[in-house]
Image (tube, rainbow, N blue to C red; front, side, top):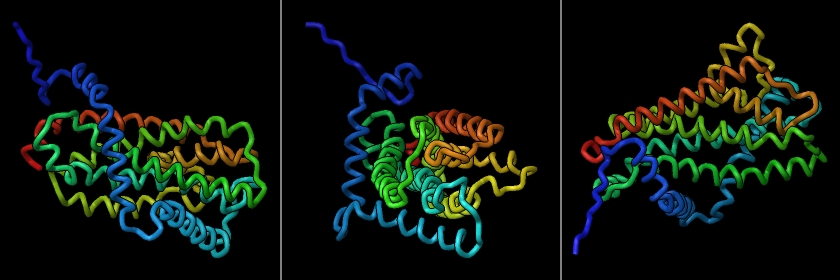
Length: 275
């Protein structure tokens, strides 16, 4: 009886690689679920931390930027809702960067023993951050109920901006995941990137406060377009979106995603040896 053996190697063609991603699709679920359980294991309040952290951050930003700095909200939206509309995508993005950067190193034993598309590991880390994002969304619903704030038809476009946020998180995460395998210093650099990015992104304030002559340059930060899109969709009313800046941010996101996939695939065959 003739039998055929199929050997799958990391260096196969791109078409076979993407087929393997589908074949190993259950790994997305198992790795993400494992990371969620490990994150909140032996904590007193478990997933409630996904609510407490963004809520306290929103309170601090509201006090600092509204009460101390005297900055206005966008349109008629209450300031806490305006802040949280920017905080939601930012915490998703920053959490994804942190999780992705360490994902390959934390799964070193798995990478060195069995073949599967390595792209699954950092992508599953983004899914973990998205779970936190969905849980944090409950705070937004609570704020809307508290302030009796009802969004308009623009809220239907929110999934579009969530997809853009996903693309930005995966693109940057793939870069950092691959670089951290090669240079372990990036575990410390990521912390700085997240802290610095929080201050240069319009999380606690409206990007409309940036001088007009600098807004296009400011939009080179891909999270500017993402946050502006979230606010446009959630706040509605007089909330506007700077279209040239949003288009530039969108181009940067696409380039970030494409280059992230390219660099990750380029370095992927060396992961098992280097790690």
